Image (cartoon, rainbow, N blue to C red; front, side, top):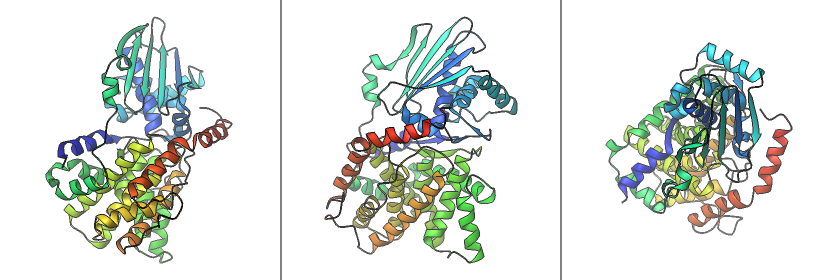
Length: 428
């Protein structure tokens, strides 16, 4: 059992983040660029980002601002450059004056946004110009993976020219459904504090979504109808209410951090909270819950490592697959049941497209949560989508490969169409 490797994966892929990770990554890049440039005031900020980043950064609310916009995210990051070390929590120190100043920068036309020519799905380039200097920061492949920092043409950091750039791309060859199952069952519970933190943080933002009016109020309204007796207080509805509420609050800009999974806060919420909701409903022990959420997170990470950090297909389907496995575990499912859960989920919700981060993501999160419960129930009863059907193979590992091939190779044109539709609404 590759204990250290699994723990390293958890520490790499589970990150605390405040707000949607694409605009926050832009803010982080701008904070770094402003931190390194000479001079105190930015006269010009250019943001060049890949289509997938723009798609996810255009419409989602920025925490604490009640506003959205790529240009606003960049302006805020430049103003909060002293907090660059906080990475995906770079906007946690936001004040009212910061918001007003950033909006003034935007209205004065100091920030421009363009679609980058890079072929990378996750690419962010920030160029900051002052009266006396210019800096350039490039982020690639991961939301905090800074590969280049230049100041006045001089390289401060350039991972592109060193072997460590290749090493920075993790190899998860040791991971598969069998090894994940073994680690989940044999790992030392005392090594899993990051899973405890994911449960605590993500449940806290869900409670925010249940209590206050955020976004579409998907979770809050499901909970309200359960309370009225118009929806049953069953496994699926309980899980949908809690999980969607977390997404409602996060996508509406609630100032609470979440534990993200594979670069996405919604994936972190969806990987953890359906399992938490089911665990609370059926009354399992804390240790069982931790292992169930661990299983969900790891399967999400495993599939997402092949699926790609950004795609034309919705990542909620992958986190929902992880959640379904975690739910099957809590329902006393064995390894075979977990594999059946994978088959059932990927045979069901694979075709859901990603049309950017926004309040409506809570609906997709809710849908995938419901599907996760259904898939888990069928799985523990020994029922699975047959290998004669569609993209599903007899071996769930091959089913995963089929889905990831569809996400990476089969949706290139879909991605372009979605982005073009969105860009017609305005770039920033």
